[in-house]
Length: 102
Image 1 (cartoon, rainbow, N blue to C red):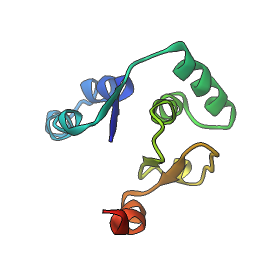
Image 2: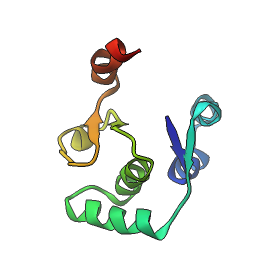
Image 3: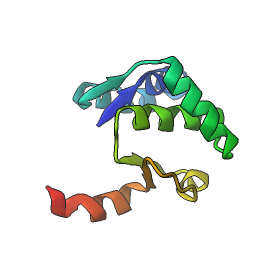
């Protein structure tokens, strides 16, 4: 699992303290931390050109820069996107698809 500067940013700006507190511990179990970089920004711009909003584009760009195979989301607009370098998938399908790998 990868954590990123974008997750830090969005969680810090979450107006709901209970949700911020529920999300924060996930950072400590992540195996990789993705810092901001020009390469991530450049890839984010390309993703935006395909119709992905700016924050989501940077999230996905972080995941791709960390060589993640999956980007897990419940965002229906993102779930309808197909990208060559990463699989966008919902949490339930991710568990079903990968449970045999454990």
